[in-house]
Image 1 (cartoon, rainbow, N blue to C red):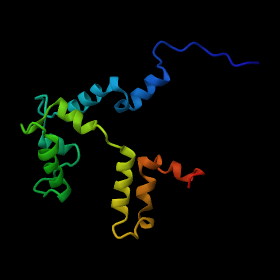
Image 2 (tube, rainbow, N blue to C red):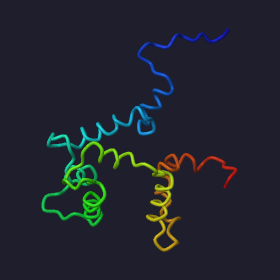
Image 3 (cartoon, rainbow, N blue to C red):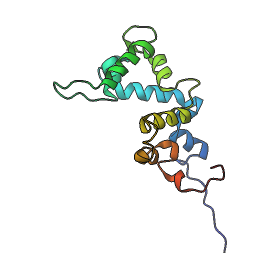
Image 4 (spheres, rainbow, N blue to C red):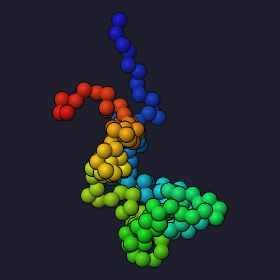
Length: 152
């Protein structure tokens, strides 16, 4: 008794199409969609651009009469100095692309640096902050920590 494979339904996709759906930032033909979705999700006033407040609200929501944490002030500086390339106080599609899909950025190295920086302030806290590593995309949310690795 063998297994009978049914034809793929018309609505189904190939492995590559599914992977492009899950990780559009890794496929050239999907990158424009990533930019457009970012703009659509954050452009609260509908002007086709992201102003500084629309950029910030994606990361931090204001409480009434509350002050902004230092990291939000740092992000405002990032917006002004590095994100708004043409200095018109708003991000257009090209500037959003540069922000969301940076060229020559190694995500794994960036995540590793972030984990060590946040977990090891005086070179002793990594064990105390194990949950940062377990919750990291770099460790497949902890799953990779339970596998045997020859290289370790």
